[in-house]
Amino acid sequence: MSFSNLQLAAPILKAVNLCGYTTPTPVQAQAIPQAIAGLDLIATAQTGTGKTAAFVLPALQRLSVPSTSTKRSKGPRVLVLTPTRELANQVTDAVRTYGKFMHIRSGAILGGMPYFEQQRLLSQPVDLIVATPGRLMDHMERGRIDFSRLEILILDEADRMLDMGFSDAVDTIAAATPASRQTLMFTATMDNTMAKLAQRLMKDPVRVEITGKKTTLEAIEQRLHAADDMQHKNRILNHLISDSGMTRAIIFSGTKKNADQL
Ligand code: AMP
Image (cartoon, rainbow, N blue to C red):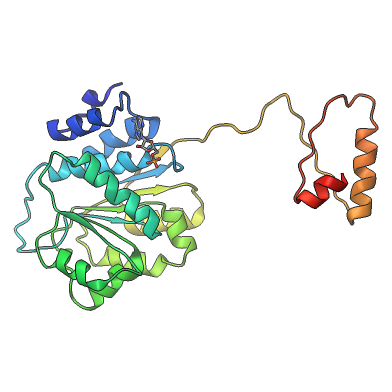
């Protein structure tokens, strides 16, 4: 598959080509068509799989078509929530890179940063906002942001967002957006908490699962030895390395000192 099969608008394709990408990664190939079709989506994918473009490209695709909302609102059409400032900055950079040939207004609402620029960002019509939940709530409570024309809500690293205690904030933010919105959720792990979150926020989501690279080899047997203390551990180690079948070995150690002693 190539990017030209993904039904992306010409300015987006041009920017993707400029990045030197030739083929979509598996998460992109699976998620982008579903997201462009307007479906809610849960994608299980780790960092490094190309997950950012998997949601930024469909978001830009949506923005390439004028808003059909009749609401007189300056609020964003797309909102991306991320757990940390660093991740929000990466997403904002991706929006700038892939949206380079489009006329869109985007920006970040982040904790620990001055309010002034964020107020300026929100004082004029904005297409896409990337935000960390705490600071966004802050602006919402001050009545500075209006989500009445929001079309797509994206949760990036949703599992980490919940781990960091943003569950209530995410629910409050989602409740302030139109029920008709599309919701895309990206997470590294999928457990019961995530399933419940999806149930609260999404409508019949499609699942995209990208399994990480296998990190163990079939031919390697793994064993766990429980040791009571350091002496016991050394006795077990002595026993293992005096095995005549053991011809080559690597021992990993927690500290330099311990490695020297070994
Ligand atoms: P992410 O998983 O979103 O953090 O992306 C990991 C890296 O892969 C980023 O540096 C992207 O620029 C790069 N990338 C994303 N999509 C592609 C692609 N289709 N081909 C090559 N590199 C890509």
